[in-house]
Each structure stands twice: as C-alpha cells, then as structure tokens.
Image (cartoon, rainbow, N blue to C red; front, side, top):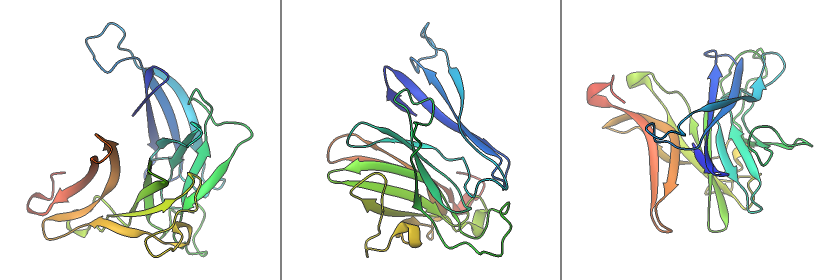
Amino acid sequence: MSFHNGQYYLFYSVSAFAKNTSAIAVATNKTLNPDDKNYRWEDHGIVIESFPNRDLWNAIDPNLVYDENNMPWLAFGSFWNGLKLVKLNADLLSIANPQEWHTIARRERSFELDDTDPGNAALEAPFIFKKNDYYYLFLSWDLCCRGEKSTYKIVVGRSKTVQGPYVDAIGKSLNDGGGTILLQGNQNWYGSATTAHTHLTEKIIWFFTHTTLRKKAHQN
C-alpha cells in the first residue's frame, strides 16, 4: 500500500495457483480510518494481466516504486522467465504509453518445460526502494509454505537506475541468476521471504518478512 496524490493505493493480485492466469489490479481510499465518513475503497480494475501460452511471466506480487524523476513503476512477478518492471501513468491506474518494460531478475529455466509450467526458476515478490545513490531490489528465492521443507530465502541486488541492471555483492547480474543472500531459514525458523521495508528515519529502516517458527510449524 502507498500514499500518493492525496489517497492510498492498494495494488493486489488474483491468480490460479501454479498458473499464470493472473492479474494485478488497484483500489484507492482517501483514508484508512474505517470510522471516517470518507472511508470507501474504490476498485479501479485490472492494471496488468498475464495469460498462459501468451506470457512467460506472472502478474502477481506487485510493488510500486518511484524513480529519481518521480515517474511511477510497478515491479512484479513469480517464476516463469523472471521478474518484470513496467512504467505506469501518473494516476497509477494504467500502463504508460509508449510501453516500457524491463526484466529485473531471472534464474535459469529449463527449455524443456512447457510454457504453461511455472518452471524450476524459483523467484518472486520483488520489492524496490532507493537509499542514497542506489535502488535496492529484494526478492524471494526458492519455495515457501511447506513447513519444514520450506527453502524460501531473501536475496538482494542494487542498481544506479530503477530499470537495472541490478547486481549482487560480487557484481553478478540478477538477470543471470545473481543475488546476495540476506536472510534464510535457521535453527529457529523455516524459510524467510516475501519482504517489505519502511523508512522511519534516514538511518533507521524497518524490514518486514514472513517465516515459520520451527516449534510451531503452523504459525506464521
């Protein structure tokens, strides 16, 4: 959720599990206080949609980011041929024309797979924010939601421009499977991933993620 143009924007996704029959839509509200007379979510419909056998990307896990010129971009994606970035119009309700798309992260996918198969290139949930001279791209690798078999982890790369290329700590491009591991499962937690951040001050950044406690594998 983001606050722009005097209102809150909620980008959300709908999908069929393990298929890229998916869409990202947006709703707005002037307030988050349900007791306020102006509290009302207005759904503006689909912004981006993906289709099996047409697209090798998946329209889920949206993240809104603004570049240094105050232009809005939407990062998104899961599995298939990687994570995407597309420029939006200033009203944040549609893709800008002429369209500008970028692949910001990908992992090697077997060419033997059918296009409808999510594949073995497990990555998803991009989150981009800028600090100082760099844009930082956080994303999730591997598999979630499998209890003790979860292998989810968070990796990161950075770029001088929001469009990329993003590289990890050793200079490998995230488009070539690069990524510096920031957080993963340990003796207390099964896989950690799907991240978000917020700045409290210039020096303090809160980092949010979801994971599963090993002692109670049903709790997140």
